[in-house]
Amino acid sequence: MSLTMMALRIAAVEALKAGGTMVGTNVLDSQISAIDQTVDGDLKTDQRRPFIAVYSDNSKAEDLGDTGLRANGRVELTFNCGVSLTMGELNKDTGVTEIIEGLPSTDAQFEAILDILGCQICRVLTDASNPWSQVFGNLCVLVSKAQVRSSSAAENVRLACGQLKVTVDAYADPPFGQVFADGSQWPTFLALMEQFDVKQLGLFRQMLGQPGAAEYPDFEALTGMTSRDAASLRLHSFDGVPAASIVQDPSSVVDRG
Image (cartoon, rainbow, N blue to C red):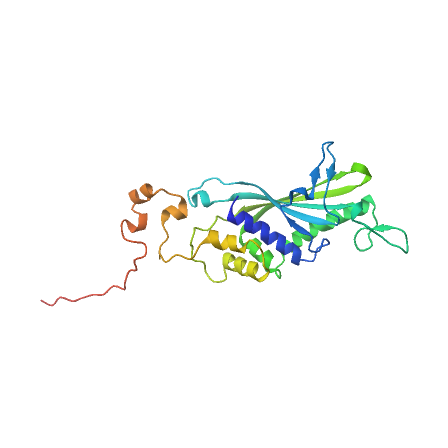
């Protein structure tokens, strides 16, 4: 796992909570039991109302020469959506069990709910007015998406669930103590976490570190290069000149003698 993968997942969760989807604020971060499988192969859920659960599943990075082990490469984010008959409410006037805003509990409506949720997820993650969505987009490049569906009839309780898999090229984790430009994605992300009281804020502050005083970051930190290789290429701290040194403006002296 990595800081950027965690940030992508948190930004997606918070964006969906603020985005006004059919599940409201019932957006879960990596909750294992949201959709589970019984010993008989059926599906079950511990949720009693429609939900979206967000996971960062797989990542693979190659050609690490530029960023070293800070690279994240191609990351697969999974959005599990679920709705079951146990989530419905009985309309006392009609005697019909309704799931969301008057939608009757039929298979066709299950499908409609899953399709709508998939559409809403895509819209929210690209919403220019949602600051969390903008952070999400600034941490990666979208590559592809895939949507699958599954259902269960265990213990006479129907569960319809679907998966939206979004593949992205995630940017590399920042070096420890990196100085960030004002308005860039990481300061914006930290400010949003503080504003919305996201519990992982302290962890991110610790892992990002305090901005360093060095004018020039070490090539080892940037690329994963060893100190020996950097020194042999005359790159390590300018070959013996401390990275914190500042070159003064040049001056000229005329020798008239």
